[in-house]
Length: 218
Ligand code: SAH
Ligand code: MG
Image (cartoon, rainbow, N blue to C red; front, side, top):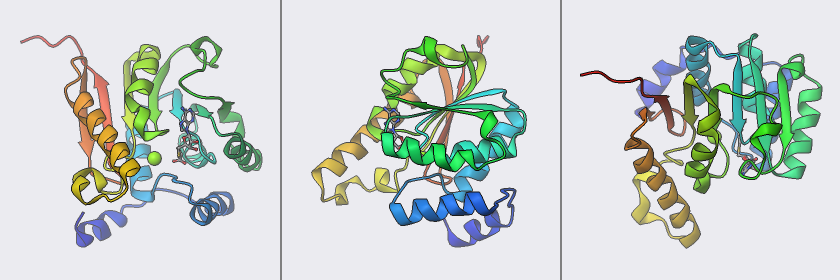
């Protein structure tokens, strides 16, 4: 996006940081953990303010940064978040222990594609935030969509994948090209999903907002 627009958008800041969130950001930067960037987080938080959810399910906790920020900025929410990597899960547990909103977050260790839905702390969710392995998004969507509440929304992060989705020809690494192709396929699949209306925004790393279609009458 154009620099001037980004600068103007940056004036509309609502995110509040403290020592913990800044420490998590610094840790993520030093260790290459792909946490949500500021502008993407601004969008996510504003969507949540409008949606006013109680229960949020996040697939892909990493170090717990986005969970912490959702819980902190939306006092009424309860975040269930799933992380499959043991060391990352432990790191998230450690960070969230030192937070005032730890009680609003359930960290679950496991592969989101294998976890038994009945073992989740809630039966259904107002918002599902898909932010785990980028090649598996369609599988996450299909597995968790049945526990989305009727008026719920599904948010998918990183659909532009650092702009690579738009510049696939220039990708030298075969594995990376495969991953980016998978994300493209998800974009196509989601765009033509018969039961969801989706908007893709080029904010942050590309965020899609999907809403289950109401019975459309023409
Ligand atoms: N939501 C975080 C960033 C998540 S990064 C934030 O914005 O702060 C993606 C994370 O998803 C990684 O930590 C990775 O280990 C995890 N992940 C990938 N595939 C997963 C799966 N199948 N189940 C659970 N976690 C998964
Ligand atoms: Mg992300």
